[in-house]
Length: 290
Image 1 (cartoon, rainbow, N blue to C red):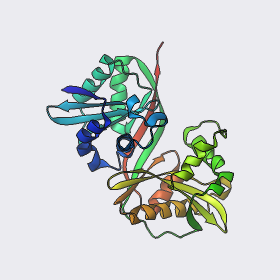
Image 2: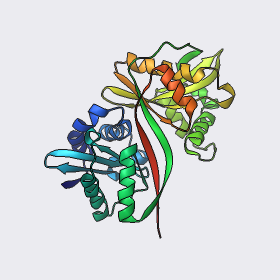
Image 3: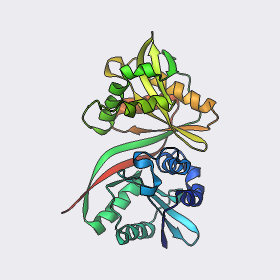
Image 4: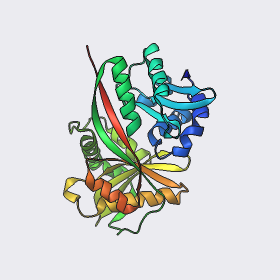
């Protein structure tokens, strides 16, 4: 088997799209990142492909495994047709070690993540911690759910509360401290993108969601947040349903999103809207022995 590293994101996309696109919902992160690199419209932070690690493991002409890392984020993997085998993983790990590629962790489909961690840990001598157990969902039709409030795109006036909601979202998702940053531009990007939506009830903002990862036939939904005071009133359901309808009306065949399996409420909400489980995914952090 061959281990090939890429430095040209366009060539990487050309070679891997055939194995990634048939599983677009599952590959929302890995494929979405590659497409961000291909467009090159935003090279801020981790988005510059010049800093990425991109590789495949091939058996002859057939790609068996695709790997992408956008530092400082984790390595993301996809086994073609979800058919990983130990020989392929061994070749990947050999390639990582031989080329001195350091990875902070891995995020991928659950069984692949578990096998990779077991094999990589044995070779590299690392400990690991599961940071998040997730489930990937996809939707092709929005169920009939009650419309609560009115949905609208985020506007400049929303800066009065959007930074607080954003930090609430980040804090709850990652367990990081709730700290409002001083860089207003970091929050204004959500408004400038034109993809963040606010749900209002009686003129008061009550929930939000964002369109992300616009791919070939699938578009992602993320950044879903309802302040604690407004929860339990159907706002998140109405907001996500509305954003999902917008995506389908734009011609996409499916919507996709990630959920934290520790949050039964959000998983229940999404299934009520019409989201169907695709697979489970693990986000794992490595700790290297000194």
